[in-house]
Picture (cartoon, rainbow, N blue to C red):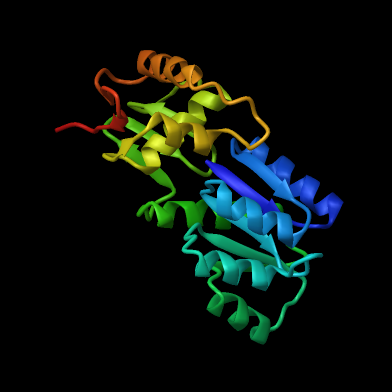
Length: 220
């Protein structure tokens, strides 16, 4: 899963980026509204953490531009403005959630997880596909109740497929959602990660649709 952080306070931005990276998200960052708006329009994100008080272009303007351009990624507004009027304005502008500073990092992570789950149509924090259970809170994966060890990129691939269980996912989509903007994106590595996952998961769970991509399929 790939997250965009648009925050101009260097220390806070660094803390949020670190927390999200440690939770196995790919993270991009912009320190002003103009660059953040551009990234949101040209890159693919599963969620955005957006500050309102930004230089060059304020957060509400950024959000309104995204929604006017048809960008539908979930957005949580992050701001020091803690009154009902600003919350209403933010939600009306297209925000999906609102978190006032100061905040606990665990709360931000929980809200991001919830936004991503809801956007994919999942209500529970545990994603289930047959014998496989992925706990989005702990980044733990079990097969028949036994914890399996995954690398960060293996987890990112599986998490994206689990969120879109039953859907055909192209290799391009996987690349866009598991790598940050500045990462060297080698499409051949996707096949490597899929191969490794197949050796750790029940047979037939990950289906290859030749020339199109992959599909995570549960038991019939």
